[in-house]
Length: 300
Image 1 (tube, rainbow, N blue to C red):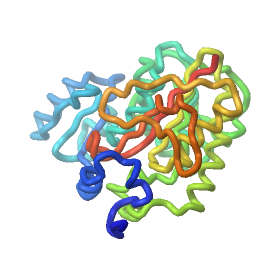
Image 2 (cartoon, rainbow, N blue to C red; image 1 turned 90 degrees about the vertical axis):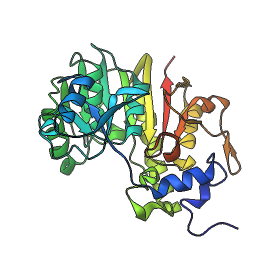
Image 3 (cartoon, one colour; image 1 turned 135 degrees about the horizontal axis):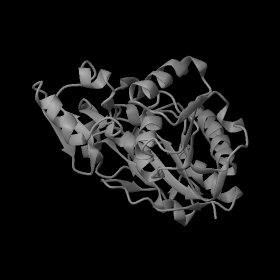
Image 4 (cartoon, rainbow, N blue to C red; image 1 turned 120 degrees about the vertical axis):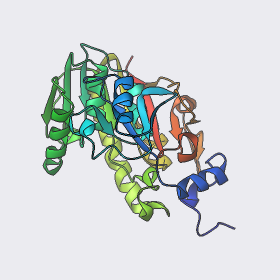
């Protein structure tokens, strides 16, 4: 019998070590920030925080991520743009994208700017970065973060993601898609029971339009990363499978630097292509963070 108090019970049969997952969902999220390497080094930030009595240490799987005993949001270091407060799992899509200096990069769903500014740091402020956000009400936060973190290569646009102008092509495209956000249940208790099926289906339809349009903007040999912060297979593996079925796209396995689970082989009566095993699921108990999904795709 399903425990009515369990988090997102529809996923019990796919989440490894269910008890550890359920326990993690009860704990508050740890305070984590990403060092803005455009302004300082990780060790410089740790020293500055230590001078204020803030205990900070680098995460072992990515030394641009720092865990602290308190949030650094109120600190001068945050105001100066030396760091960006985020969940650790939110670094994985940009690590999978692996942007390089000189690249032409499109962040199709950019606000509030965490991944945009991470991309710019990985590019060392060299190249072209389009930060697209269709919702104009989210532009102030996006622009504020771009300016605060010293990003010089980003241009902000406001097109619908599924009809972004066919300019380019782009070397790398990130589709951090609007989703049901079930992976944020540690900070959003209303999501403990999971999203409604109607919401999942509505978002999956949008996600399929976004990923297929983004793929058309990608140059041959380029990298497209599709990511969400939800557990729903309809919004994750099924969306990638939709792209694979309608194009020559190929999944490139992403060797996550930290604990993860591979993409699902099936969901319900639907079997997914074997290559989707090379995509990545993360759960709160695996890296003491939120949950999400990352797929890395290339165009032959």
